[in-house]
Image 1 (cartoon, one colour):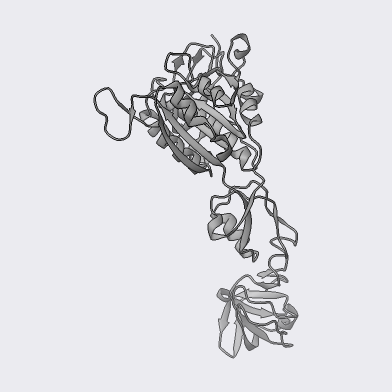
Image 2 (cartoon, one colour):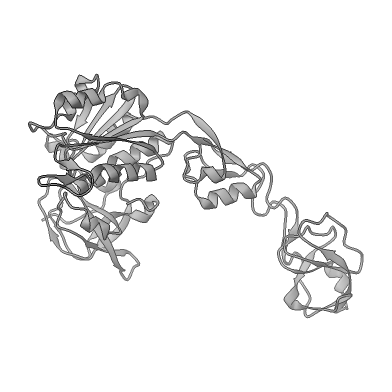
Length: 423
């Protein structure tokens, strides 16, 4: 039996070459080859920049802090003025926002946090080490030179790189930019992503006899939106070749990426591949050595990339994280992160059929003595249900050649928190 192993690039698809399926690595290369970073830039306010992707690097125009200032509430003084003394007269008060002033000889100035440091000051004694007598101040100890002073440029230098191109802008980035006096930022236009579902059996809401509620389209719309895309719901396509081809005609120029779920197999009602070609598109890859999610198709429709995912909901979710999310990240100008690079250990035993890499939902159960996450496998490898996924903390993957996982074996996983909460 083959045990789980961790290798460079995760070693999850080494058996794929012996089949008619693409390896995961080859499939990802093909998926990414169909998209290119969007060049259109929008200038937005910081408030509107949340969740957007920086179109270019942003550098600091000035050093931070801009001027020497007090790091504590207390008293500004010259250490030499305390030689043989324990108190100094108080010559005034300096607050944040005041103009720069000089420190009088032989005196102290009351000063508040962030206030500009009076010229001549070489220490600020924190208020807790002083006895404030209003017109004079007693010091409980002799301060050290430089104490409680924040020097200009000590946080960052002028020209400091603040955020890189492709950064997904979060609240802390907005705070940093605002602290540097930046009120607007150039962001990449959101990728335009269209989503179809396929199948006469699908419905919205509670089903009638023989119907199935459409879970894939709402899930894909939510996932793509959460990834930073401008999403368009193109509804449910019927199991009809002509209607499907008609729906595809002319839409390639409107979107950067078109997603479908279902109808990418070879059954009598699987029309996506033929319809794509009938609408002037092309198929560039089909079938991946992945479970669930073997039936993934990569193509082009006009200038738009076309990714056809399987019909089963969990397989759709896996396919999105494996291939669609990297495509959206590439469109946004970011380097797509590897699917699963976090090391963990199995808290379960599992025997499986080798041949395809397998992705499955996991729950973080504990940490071992070395601090590694201990994962519990959820569900029974059924690609039609989302219930185990709803209870999961992330997705784990095992290599194609793995037939047995024993308790304590190493695993690679992708915590949902590593995708910005994207589940």
